[in-house]
Structures are given as structure tokens and as C-alpha cells.
Length: 423
Image (tube, rainbow, N blue to C red; front, top):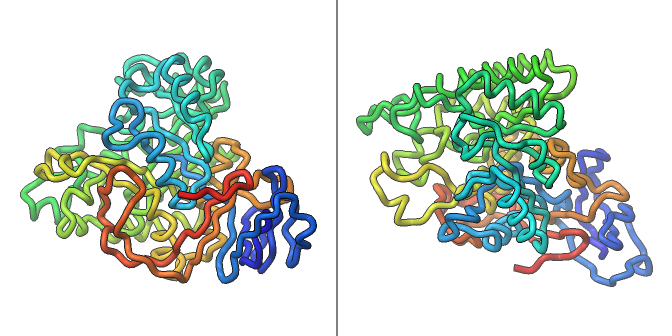
């Protein structure tokens, strides 16, 4: 395959120029201004004129709800949503039903995703049943193919157990991704304790719920040598603490992710969008949103992750308090980043791709996130100047507060191991 005439943007090689990309036998063979057609063994030519050619996107935080809640999403529909969004690698959370806390469940999922058109990886839980009481057999789960661990959706409150988990992860060299919300500070989930909550007669989720957990886990990571990922950062104070901790982190242990909804929206979205804008941790204030963007700009937050969380329409139509938290995100993430980060003047495309592909790949050591010669031929081709309206999804669910929004950044081709994927 030759991807012809696009603007190649690759953070690893610091390439940003018009060039052709040659992929043979699933690997990048050359990136050059004009590649001879004779070198193209398979013969397919993708016209990328006027578009950006970048490493396929990597999402370290997604939910496919399979097994257990396949009425919301399954591996097949989740995969199609990822492809539509330009993702060639996706890491699935372990809060399935049953949870991925033993080898039999992990192996079953690994077997089922093995024929996916993109790279789908399954995390295992840190604790049995995600109950926060006892550790899983992390060594065996890692040996069987779990690239990391997370009880996502639930925090690990017990300090002693969290330390033990980090010590174990440090020995294995595998990351732990952490959902940082202490329930003792949460009166109602999914809405910030502030102006909008009071408008609805609610107390909401205090920012302290995140702050106290982030503070503890940054300290533990530095003490134990564990690789950690602070998930879906939502509070300005958390950004500041991560920034300070990274100054002490000589080994590159500490990582953090932000979601497109946390850098695109504030708590005021709940006024217009109701439970479609309900998410854990909640959307907060404009001060928090801008702090997250600053964190993305200076590397404090080194990844953008979707937290793609499908729910059924009937669930989201419940009262705000009883409706589930979460929104889908795989199909809108790139466009939200282009619109609210690049077009808004906060960063260039090189930095955006680093946050959405290169850095997420580095967290788990995946062969992804680059277009250097010899790299796997995972590519996204998109037009950053093309406007489109969010109105349809390949996901089985459509719980998104962005429906009806006009965004910049349209994915045209998703290519995995040198094969153009058709939806």
C-alpha cells in the first residue's frame, strides 16, 4: 500500500511534511516525498491529498461491555466504533460482568478479540471482584496476556492493599490505572459539587474525592516504583499535584490521562444535556477545564483517553440521580481534540497525535504510535479542516452530549497492519 500525497505527522521521527507512506507486509517500509509505484507490492494506493497521515490512534481506556452487558456494546460494535474514530489499538477496562479477575475470563476475551481487525487488549482487575479487599493473582494474569491492571469505576480505598498492589505491579513492570474517587466525598455521582448541582437541588461529588486519592497514589508510586496512570483527571488541583510529582519522578513512573469531555465541557453541559453529560468523575468548572488543557500542553497529562462508556437510551432517560454515568467517545475523540485543542490554538497537530497515539502506546510498550521505518503499518488518515455534524454512531449506544455539534476533523481511512478497514 502507498498512502499518497498526505501531510505526514509523526511525533517519533518529528516528521511534519508532505510525503508518501509505503507499507509492505504490514510494516512501514518508507516515508518519502514521492515513492515509485513499482515498490508497492500489493498495489493499493490511498489518496491522502489535503489530509493528515498519522500513526493510528491508541486508546488506553475504553469499555466494550463484553461479557455481561452486550445490549450496550459488544466486541464487534466497539471495534467498529474505534475504527470509525481512527483507533487502531484499544485497551479495554476490566469492569465487565463478571469482572476480569481470573485467568479463565481473561483468556476467553483474549481468544475472542484475536480475530479483530485492530489491536484490542484486555486489562485485568487489581482486586478480586473489584471489591477492594484482596488482590488478584496479578503475576498469572500478566503472564496470560493482561498488559496492565485496573479496577476502573471503583477506587481502591484500602491504603495497605493499594501499596501491596503497587509493589506487585512494580515487580511485574506492568502499569496500574487508577479511578480516583473517594466515595466518602460523593453525595450524588456524576455532577460536580457546585453551582449546577445546587441549581438542581443536589450536593454532588466534591473535588476532594479525586484530590485525596491522587495525592495518596502519587506518593505510593514514588515510594514503590510502580508505573501508574491517573485516569480521567477532572480537577485543577489534581493537575497541579501530578505536575509536582513528575518533577520528582526520575524513572518515568507517573502518567495521567484526560478525556475529550473533560477538556471540552464544563458542569454547565448538564443544564442542556442532562444525564448525557453525567460522567464519573464529573465535568467541573471552566477553571478545571483550562487547567486540564494546560496539563496536556506541558506534558503533566501525557495522554488523551476516551473512557468510551456505552449505556442504553432507556437508562439515560431515568432521573438524573438514578441514570448511569458515562458517555461514548471513540467516534468523537479526534474531532473534539482538533476542534477544542488545535483549532482553539492550544497546541499543534504534532502534540495532539503525541497525546492520542505515541504516548498511550508507550505506556504499555505497544508496537504502535509511530510511522518510522519498521513500525507496524497502523495509520489514520483524516482531514483536520473538514466539518461534520455528530449525528450517527457505529457504537451500539448513542449516549453522547455532543449529538448535533459541528466539529472539525473527519476520519477518512483507518489502516491496520497495512490493510484499509471498511465499515
